[in-house]
Length: 124
Figure 1 (tube, rainbow, N blue to C red):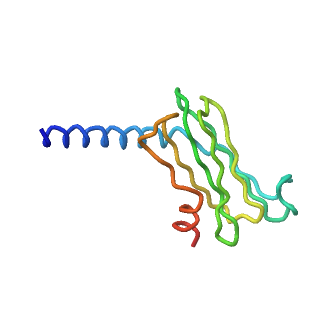
Figure 2 (figure 1 turned 120 degrees about the vertical axis):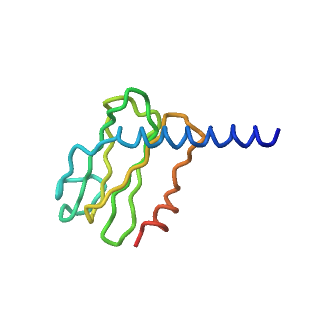
Figure 3 (figure 1 turned 30 degrees about the horizontal axis):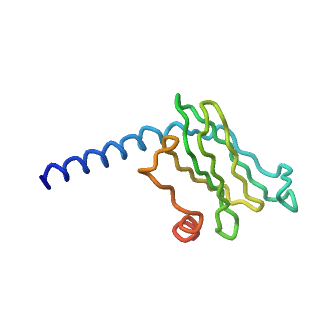
């Protein structure tokens, strides 16, 4: 009985990883820009924005981040992002680096890293 349960758990985990891999290419960067006005930033010099668009045929939960010069990440999330919708990440004094995470909308078997985890792991 334990063997069957273990096999079922492994199959569910593998399906979850496969779905994440398939969805990771469904959020695409389609534009970025430097030095544009941003209502959240005090000055224009160094502002960086990166634009992402969903090319999926289903709703997605997404998390995107843009890195500041001090290596901190500004993180933005959207739940149930619909096909063809977009999301923007920005940094007021950016490095030009960005990251994204994607999963099927409402998929609770996958958790995104917290903002704190992102900054601890990637803020170097």
